[in-house]
Image (cartoon, rainbow, N blue to C red; front, side, top):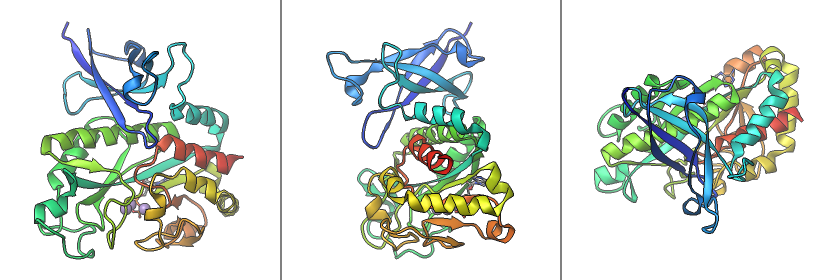
Length: 334
Ligand code: ADP
Ligand code: MN
Ligand code: MN
Ligand code: MN
């Protein structure tokens, strides 16, 4: 029987968690999650343990076809556990799992717009390719042409990779800052969408290696008159899809808990949510129809029908999706 490569992926213990992964060789192709063995790593190298008791456990929770390696190779998403089987403090997925069990009957659906900025070494890709500062923002959003688009080959490869594996992959568009782009994951159940986002991020970073391009999720990668990068989080419940009353209630709760949300919506949020560059200042809460300067945007079609989904524009590109979805579910449900 031919052996296969399984890439075990997890989030590390940094304040803004980073992706980590290592390869395990398995004796045969995997058919179900139970075929994927539990594994481990050195937590003292990932901010997840002290050197004197460094073992952390990787508990497989979902696996995907690996579109980079191909064949029967797989990507394995993991929760991190302590050797005694208890939850590791960095495991925010476990919280989301609990909330989904508790409030699953509300029928939450999410869709995340992942923005990011391509870099060559320490310099944004557009700056590197032009050998200096690009012309001001304006022509780049959904643009076409070598003077407007930087890194298209990587983005196209990433689309193909995401389609080849089983991701809820919605679409892609080039962004306002040159060399900045976005893909959308969703709409789907909270755990599936958050898991798929982690895998999509992994694939982008991994394929970027082949082009010598790095993917920055920084909230405000370039100071000055350049857009920051967000992770607009779209959400709905069964009720919101049916009635406008549910809508009003949700908006009221979001307003009430604004500060708590800002606190977990990503590092550098105060640099990004300034009130300029299609944002609402982080110190304010505002919702509006089609308003890209709002904290919460009500899509025009949703306003017309008086029901549907809302867009939370506050989360930054570098969010931990498990934390943000947990926060939204808690605020709306409790
Ligand atoms: P924008 O106009 O803000 O750029 P996008 O088209 O980039 O919007 O993203 C819209 C997002 O909304 C997608 O991620 C999609 O999955 C999500 N979405 C669509 N319908 C729903 C729904 N009923 N509930 C939650 N999310 C939804
Ligand atoms: Mn979008
Ligand atoms: Mn966008
Ligand atoms: Mn958006």
